[in-house]
Length: 312
Image (tube, rainbow, N blue to C red):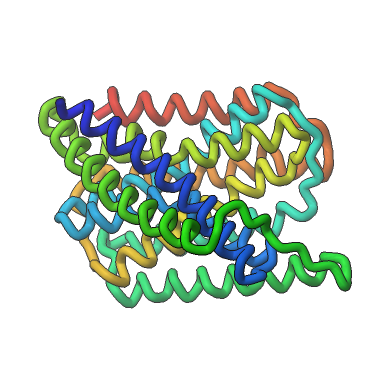
């Protein structure tokens, strides 16, 4: 029953997140909000909404380790599994010049989080700092995209639903996210107790993998359709959003203390695998990503999972 609750909560999160994006994009079309703004705000928030609601629910219910483990594990799996599988399934040519900036921002956000969690706490002030950095990142991204876009062109997202239906979809999706997050956190904490493992282990593996499924779907489809920079850009952007938005917003509302000292180990792996993106991919300056590069990232990810479960 507990496992059923876990998977039901995960399924409800993913479905609700998908419909939140669809409803929000349709609503943006009604109000003539450009696709640029929608992509940087609505879609980014929608694909990361499962992680956000899970982290908030976990912090409020006294399971702060799940809040942090969800984000740290998701960032590790985004690179070590999602990006790796994207390259393995559909090797592609990538121009890394534009991705370097996003990598620098992601790496900077990662280091800021590591420094903030040296005392194993995230205060309200630190949360507000992360949110401020998020707003600065969104503003910079919008400015950069507008500068690079063609002058005089303005694209608006398609209107797929009527205005009332769009609003109802958004409301129902938000309720689904809250319900799914509560089921997921409750199920995960129960499974951790049943298996005799910590909430940290469950959160950095099962929960993190589950909440990374939207990024996996988006990146795989983008790679198959030869929209190569979107594949990596989506992952880098998601990792930035996970740190600045999810932990930032969570700590702004509910400052928390991390109890499991094993998170120091996880933070080292998150920093290291973020650095691997630069070492394995970005120095190419425009080249074909062969499968061995994806296999390298995947090997690192599964080595991490091995250490998490079997090395005390």
